[in-house]
Image 1 (cartoon, rainbow, N blue to C red):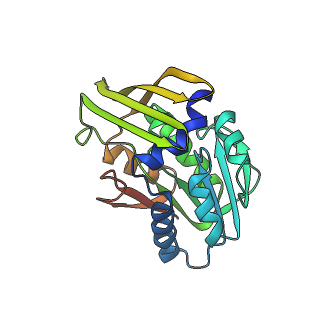
Image 2 (cartoon, rainbow, N blue to C red):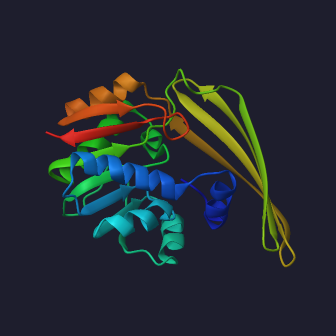
Length: 237
């Protein structure tokens, strides 16, 4: 789970690294509407600070978000979102209603951690979809596309605040482990440093497709998008 310090700067970090939430959400919205033209309701699982929800709310009349991190949801609540926000685990949640579309963006599904929990998450998606509903899942890296030892560095300034981010990612068994160091500086607080460690499972494409099938979906994989991770589009049978 992301720490409170990270949540306060997450939107700034990802914007500075070129993440285009609007383009991603509009593209996913277009693809799910090709399968479900009459879709009006959407649940974004792993919604974080609501950056994708801001865009989904422009084209879907009824939107909601789910995230395990209360700190992330607190940031989302400061935005003018047309969305109902829920705290919950993507692998074990019950909202008491169904949606036409469920999205899970930014590789968040990798945090399921095991094949059993991946299947539990997708079973929960199926349970919360209307008949013929569509799930759009942005996977984490596959084992063959993950770059072991990858290093990344960014520096960004916004107003009177500057932030530096350095990361190192390695493969540990069937998972990726990313260690990230952040340094922030502003005139009032001075310089502050904190670290985060993220572990995500490197599921294979076949594992995703099998898990979707086992819980009642027909799934296709769209390669190339989302910085090369691709997207799974699944229709509930």
